[in-house]
Image (cartoon, rainbow over all chains, first blue to last red; front, side, top):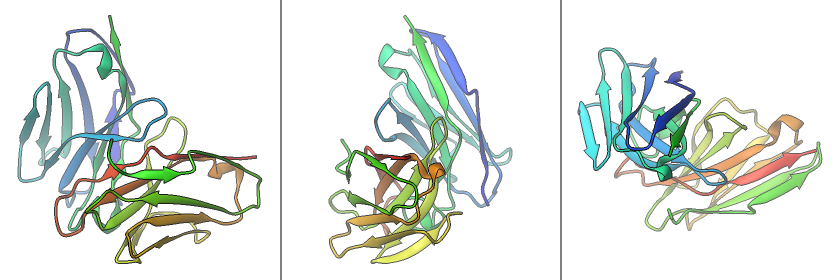
Length: 117
Length: 113
C-alpha cells in the first residue's frame, strides 16, 4: 500500500518568515494530494490540495508543489502569522472516486508548526 | 465549519465493551469515511461507505464495523474494545462522482480503561 513520509516533525519559524513542509509518497499511482491543518482539539481542516496533472497551486499565502517524477510534494506558507501555528498533515490517495477513493487517504505523521512572535 | 458533525465528543469505555460512534455528513455529500488518529500520529483509514455499503477498508480487524443510512449519515461500531483502541475517531464526508475533497468532523475522543 501507499506510504507517506513527512518532514520535519517540528518546525519553528519567526513570524513573517516562510515555512516549508515536505512529503514523499511511495505509490506512483497516487494522483491526489491534500494538505490538512489540525488545531488542538479539532478535526483536520483541508487547506489546499493538488492533483497529479498540476505542478503547482497557490491560494493567497499558501502554495503546494508536486514533483511526480521524484514522488514528492511540499507545502509553502509565506508571511507566517501566529494563527498558522498548528499541526499540518500531508496525504496521498489513488482517488478514482471521492474522499480518497476506496483506499482512503494515507497521511504523513504530521508537522508541528510553531510561529515565534 | 465543515458541516460534518460527530457524536459524542468524548467517551470512556471499559475494555471488552462495545461502542457506537455517529457521524452526520455535510449537506450534498454521499460518502463517509472513518479514520482512527492515535496521539501524535496522522489519521489512519478504517473504511469508507457509499450507497450504504462498505466501499473500501484499511488494515483494521472485523470488530470494527459500520453502517451508512439513507440520509448518508453513518455509524462506526467497535466490539470487544482493547486499550489500544483509545484514540480520536474522525469522520470525513465527501461526494463520489464529483470533487475529491474530504471534510472532517471534530472527532470523538474514545478512552478505553
